[in-house]
Amino acid sequence: MKVAWSATHQEFLLTDGYYFSGLYKELCKRKIEIEEVDHFDRLFEYDVIVFNYPENPFSDDEKEKIREALVQKGKRIVFTAHFKNKDGVSEICNSITREYGIDILPEGIKDEIHHLEDDLFIITTDEVKLYREGVKEVVFPYSAPLEVGKGAEIVLRARKTSLTDSGKKSPVLIAQRRFESGGKLIVCGSCIFWDNFSLFRLDNLQFVVNMFEGAE
Image (tube, rainbow, N blue to C red):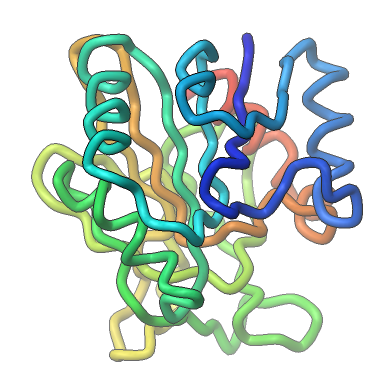
């Protein structure tokens, strides 16, 4: 399997070893080839494409190429954001994901009971709905909540003890949309659940590997 980590829209870079060296090394151990790609058209030569916190908007032509990759070519494409629409990233992602029934809300999520490091935003959850083989609990820091419409599935949600800024309990953290081509759009409210802080805590590593391998 080949994974393209986009460097086309001012994303957090895979080559930033301080944050993502663990992810790169662990995927390579499992024969998952992952490469940072800085040319948009080249992204579609890979099986999986990751847009990890894209800060630059997508053009209409780029949106159409993403649509074709999902609907016609069976690619898996992952978008990640951050809480409270930081840097406008949630809305940049929504310009693509909203069409497919997944909306990243401009809010944060706290859990006063289930969290790490005395930080209410570094929430943990055992509400794993998909990609859960070998996974009991994950940490999901500084996530935005997702609104999920018709045709989309819940992958991960927060515990019932969690609250969004607007007071909603147990919000969705990751959702996906399947396509007849075999393609999948996966949308994550957090962009740091697979960084060096999170990856080796609880069952995050296995959860991330399952996502890349498509092991639901």
